[in-house]
Image (cartoon, rainbow, N blue to C red; front, side, top):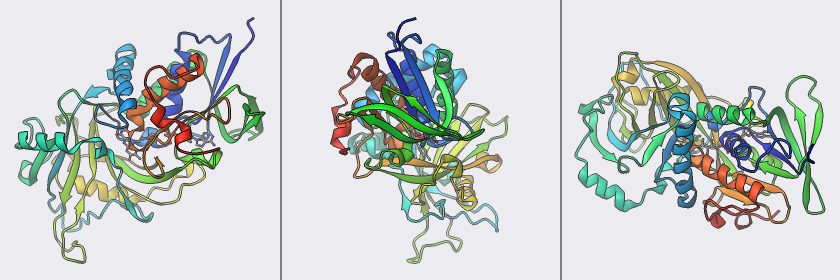
Length: 423
Ligand SMILES: Cc1cc2nc3c(=O)[nH]c(=O)nc-3n(C[C@H](O)[C@H](O)[C@H](O)COP(=O)(O)OP(=O)(O)OC[C@H]3O[C@@H](n4cnc5c(N)ncnc54)[C@H](O)[C@@H]3O)c2cc1C
């Protein structure tokens, strides 16, 4: 048997870690004879329990940063074509626009609220930062109103609908199904999935040597895996393993609503600005409450509408399994969207959930590449609000770094770890 020359350990089973496992195990020079790949995940419930299982799933050419988006969008298309993504993870093109209007009172008892969890200050998820003002205002002039098939928001409550990008520039996936598919396809090629919480990356003489973790099931033994390459993809938890990383965490709530089977829900993702009805819920200065839930209809696993609210600053818990969900924040998100959509109002709330977005402090990111001062330590962290979109590009770049010695698919110098922190 040939000598093993690569022992790759990936830390974190979110979309970035699972996609990296996929790209490494599908790289032309990968062979299980010479390369072992182990993916460690700290949740007792398996992969994709954090943001990667609870995100919206938008994949857009107008996302950021541009150099990663250009690779990622094409890779998303290729993966969907290669592995039946339409049926397997709900890949499809969608319309996408900003919707502005007012909500209507649901019933006497309804108190829509703000949708921010009881976790401190309100934070924006900042998805629309990638749009330049020019394309938005041009689109505004063109768009005079709702598209004919966007019938699941009430026309009478609409002030304006403005497409955010040309047709063909925006798509979606179901993030949980996509992440799990990447993992399953990687496992088929020999990747080992291990339920374990990493406690340290060990090194010697400027080179990574191993990773120590504690099993999260069974006897909870502490074990060490020899590693020639360690790829850190632990999302918002990455600084727990590498404390100098400039990454913070923003919590956001979301729900899914199962719509009645007979209702037709055209595929539009909406970034809303809803003026809530002024039945006593006005701000102290007398201004009406304006809320901005994001709405994502999905064809899989069943016809459903995903809705997320704003972020908050509640402290990151020790593991993904301990993320707190504020039921009032979920209720508020539901009522806000039910106040503009009869289809949501007549649907059934299925999931009420929260997750943490990994944000690079000071802006920019994600951070993608090798840490020059510690050979073999590679980062794929800080994907902010575009990690679902940018995971395939990140994963392809990281697989090239490990298997070919350098990133070939794009010029990612702007995302290099050395620009963000010193070890
Ligand atoms: C409400 C919301 C909506 C979003 N919508 C979109 C969208 O529409 N489009 C888009 O592109 N992006 C979206 N995002 C952003 C996207 O979800 C994230 O950027 C992405 O999921 C980050 O993936 P990740 O793999 O880096 O992190 P995560 O999904 O957080 O995965 C990290 C994993 O590492 C594990 N881990 C942590 N510590 C350890 C340890 N010590 N040992 C082992 N494992 C560990 C965790 O348990 C977790 O499973 C959204 C985010 C939010 C919050």
